[in-house]
Amino acid sequence: MRLDWASLLDLLKSRERFVLTSHVRPDCDALGSELGMAGILEALGKDVRIVNAQATPASLRWIDPEGRLESLAEQVKPADLADRDLLIVLDTSAFAQLGAMADVAKSMRDRVLVIDHHVSEDDLSDRWFKDTSAEATARIVYEIGLRLRVPLTERIATPIYAGLSTDTGGFRFPSVSGESFRIAARLVDAGASPPAIYRELFEQDTLARLHLVGRTIAGARTSHDGRVIFSSVRQSDIKEVGAVPADTEDLINLTLAVKGTEVAAILIEQPDGRIKVSFRSRGPVDCSSLAGSFGGGGHKAAAGAILDGPFDTAHAQVTEAVDAAWAERMAAAAV
Image (cartoon, rainbow, N blue to C red; front, side, top):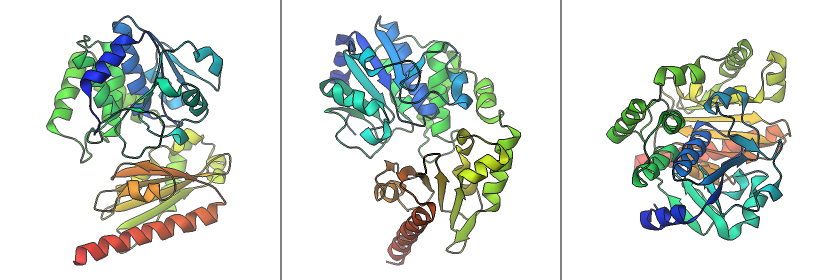
């Protein structure tokens, strides 16, 4: 953990023009942390822009009713951000996760602050504010607002709740504590609506997405007496059912739900031919170590990486790595 609260709060108070960003293929914790942080800074009278490398996925646009989220993929040019005093990177600690915003971060090298809860990192910044024990980056953002004495409003509470609830798997992951629920209660009291957020997150599936889910589950394969499960999604699968890339989100959690599963891995072929691999574990196998072997990162229980193709080669490499990790787990258990 790198938690120098005094330095962080002094830095935020001393700067006036901020730009916030997060990782490519943003999830609710990324976007919710950005929007929550923007609301907190604006309550202090700061000038804030949120600019990501990619446009907001259609399935998550509900989280931004004011249209605050901008992207380099649309109208914003890197030169437009030259007047910013500080770039805050949320929910990632690696250049590789920033996409086109990595070049902006490099151009602002002495003006980058990282706020994150992931273990993995590179030389993205000299200013780190990390709590790897936090269940979500949104939790850290909540704490920042609390320490800055910013009143908790619905505008701030809703995206923070969305980030907190999704990165804890609906408050069911081992990272959840009693304080997670106490914070959630305060966010609800401030105006966040769990039914409305749940409806946007889990009751907006298209028929194409459900067909993709069925195809993915049908193709899943287990090993090691059913305790390891592999699945995959090819671009042909997505096209044949009429789905979109965003429909692949959270598929791995469905396979982890299979009884007896301790480790899950899924390979998803990207439009550019690269392979996105995600790992999940609810045992001693360390997902961050697995992902790290492929240049990725994350947490012990959840991590991911991007591999170059071809698909069959990537699949063989991931299978070998998972088998090796499982062998280590069994050897350690036998001691």
